[in-house]
Image 1 (spheres, helix red, strand yellow):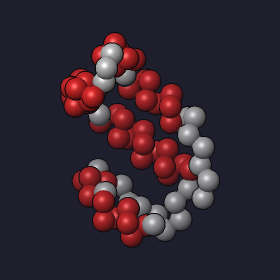
Image 2 (cartoon, one colour):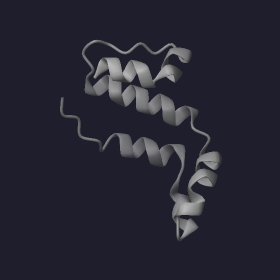
Image 3 (spheres, one colour):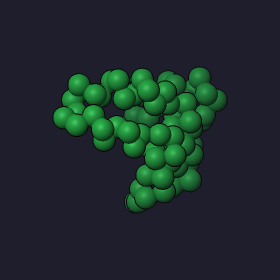
Image 4 (cartoon, helix red, strand yellow):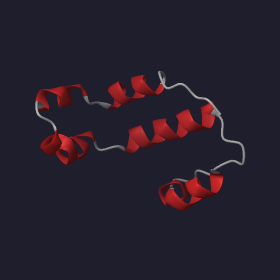
Length: 77
C-alpha cells in the first residue's frame, strides 16, 4: 500500500509530507486535514455543480464541514 501511495501522492512531497512505513489513523487524519486546509472550496463546488441536481446542498461545503467528516471516518488497518 505504501508503494501505491507514493506513486499517486506527489503533492505530498511538495508539502514535505513523508509516507511512513506503518500508516496509522493519526497519519491519515493529518494528511486529510492538510488537504482540506489547502482546498479551494469555491473551485471544488464549481467542479461538481454540473453533477448535482440541487446545488443548494453545496452550501454546506466549507473547511469546517469537511474537517468534521474526518473525525467520523473509521480506520481499520
